Image (tube, rainbow, N blue to C red; front, top):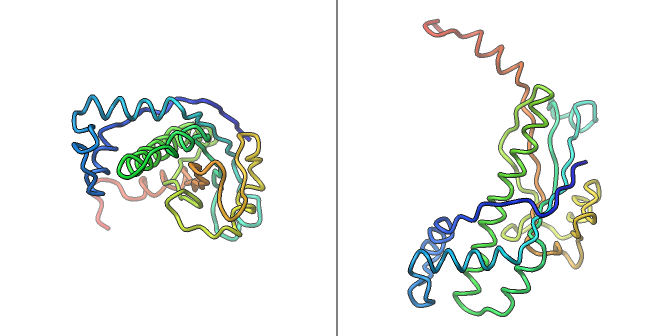
Length: 199
């Protein structure tokens, strides 16, 4: 089990801008049309975040892995903490919507950082990682009854994450799973079909 607190997440204001425009938010009306102003807004939101994650690797010798014919997977939980949620609670209208979009971008970017760390560990054992699969996120309609069972094997309390009243706390939290890919099998498949060979 790996636990990492206060790790660095790049703040991509341009991605927040792209998603805000997609959601028809008028950045001019909220005084954030200028790129530097939006960057400052995103930076001020992230200042109140305390990114943390715990993740672990499920091995191929587990029954559920054997059933799926999978060499394993990385499962984990990642949170931004409660600071951004508290700050956004004082916002209204488009500003509140924009804060929620920014939180989503921070979570997505943070998951990529965590996935890179997990990939290094899987790579040391001869595996590659597939694409992360979200089991719970603020924008997903996950069954509240499933949340405690998702968190139970992850010791999520170590980073202050819990499940109650059908929701995750803090709210800006992801539960994820990343499948392992058998690198040796992939290499064999590449060697089996050499350039110029007829299929």
